[in-house]
Length: 559
Image (cartoon, rainbow, N blue to C red; front, side):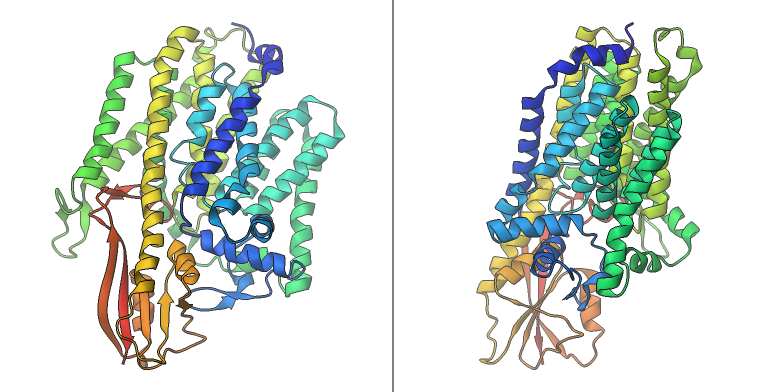
């Protein structure tokens, strides 16, 4: 077997630039045609404000149901500034300013291809498509922070590898700058800082690593010092101070979602792990069938069917969802453990006697990277969501791809086995994206419904909306008045349209001075029996059964 580093050198002239660009175009276009969703409205609003007063970016109020200082909401600067420029140039057109995000998609695709060529040469094209169209990345792009911070972080890692292998001071400087921008895109970029530091330590390039980290921290601190002087307090310090509560208790709360969220979005990655472990073809196909049956069962079996409840509390403790995600978690984490063991086990030395020291360093680096991602998940996650485990899922894929290369499968046989698994993984990504599209579309559709209905208001009454996520954006676009209760108390005869979310409804009802009469409930849904909202973005599982209604508005009249 020829050392991987040698094969990379020979193949370096054939970088698949057209394919890489096309994958980024597909990711961008699919994201652009999806309606505004979840936290998009926050970054759109901040982007507009940042460009209106760039030297005092947080000098405004924002929030629902209460107006608060913009500096109190966790929104680092890189995406808002960039998105704000796009909105300024292209106008408030979601399709256009989402296309403006193309450089992040392109950066991600280019960097992923570089890493796959380094970790699993020969499989980079298939794995690139598998990744950008995966359940972890495709549905969650939106106008949110996760893909930009991932793109910048992966780019910094690619540049770190290149700076280690060259004597270029400019690459060291560029690595530090990109890493600093990643941290100021989302503070989870600090995980990438530790990953890059570990890479330099493994490669015995401590001084270079120190320079990169210093440059990254200077970029990070420069912004925080600027905000401290312009706004009165560092954005990072404010949100560091908001981290309260028992750390151990929060970590315990995050264990089960870690297992099930990764189990739900990484099942196809585990199938690649099976192939890498030289599982028999029929075993791999059997798991493909079982996983398919699992998701079909989740779609077809109602939540209240096959449910066991606690007789005293009435809480469900066993449902089709808990069974399915429990099994998927067991499968994914077991395969992950086997892949790691096979990759690092000394018993496999006979199979890879031509492996270079450099190649073994990469194996250990990937394992350490995974450990850092898991520690970072517990340290930085305020609540569970798919976005919190993207890094873990991606590094698992790197490990599986690495083992796929290391076991030196016959190229024709491995491609024959791998191709259906790649198609299956992309199919799951399209499924998750489609369900998320339906959820986003429902918010846009219901905004039209509540705009055209009047519920017989008086001549001087106001129609207020108390909403979150994409619905907040579309209700504003329909000209409805956003209710901030700490700013304005609705008067008698006013109509309040409340997004049917327990937290918002309870908040409104907590104001005893408001005498409310429920006039109507407006529902929007469809026949597709799955949903991602809000589990994918804030929950223990990425996708769940949907009974038909996707979104509801409660219509109250102030008496």
